[in-house]
Amino acid sequence: MKTFELAGQSRTDLGKKATKAVRKDSKIPAILYGGEKEIAFTVNESDVRNLIYTPDIFVIDLTIDGQACQAIIQDLQFHPVSDEVLHMDFLQIFPDKAITIEVPVKLEGLAEGVKQGGKLSLEMRKIRVKALSANVPERLVINVSELGLGKTIQVGQLAFDNLELLNAKNAVVCAVKLTRAARGAKAAAAAGKK
Image 1: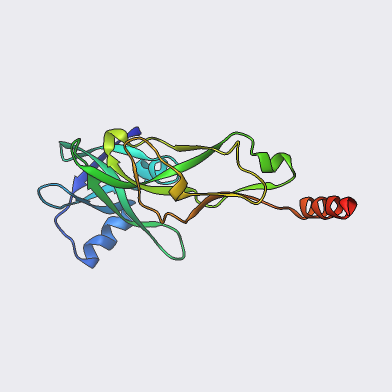
Image 2 (image 1 turned 120 degrees about the vertical axis):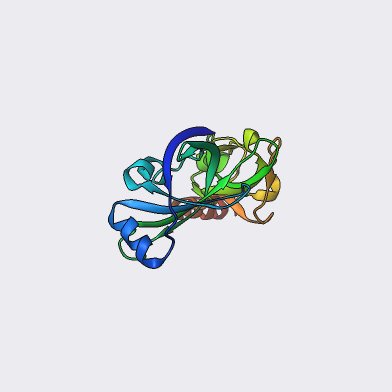
């Protein structure tokens, strides 16, 4: 995984009024879980823009008032109207402790069904995995070269080294769907054989 450096300032006032003042000052209230104790802190909005609005996943080198640790984003809360980030939850990670994280999916190869006129459709952009942080890849690469027309790849068919896939086994990751043109060609071919 890629790394991202982020600095935060701890905060002690945790009420609604204090939180509104923090947001007004272009900062985002945040909390760090997973360590010895929970730590409430703030980060600058501008500092996390490249961390939030990207499909990539990061290990964050987090420094709060001079104390350094590694973390991942656990949860984000957005304002329902303005899409402004209201709160961030970080999970402290350790080299010997497994984490659960959603990893982006990347399809590779030209599907057999696409050559026959079908359309490749990515149904799941991310798959939830459980692994040690050192074993989590930037992307899960899935080869679709053998995928035929009208066929799917499900989570249960996938296997990656040192990763446990947590999504439902029958959840469809990608599919080659029949297009209207492919259906017409198939019907015409069937009519021609009769």
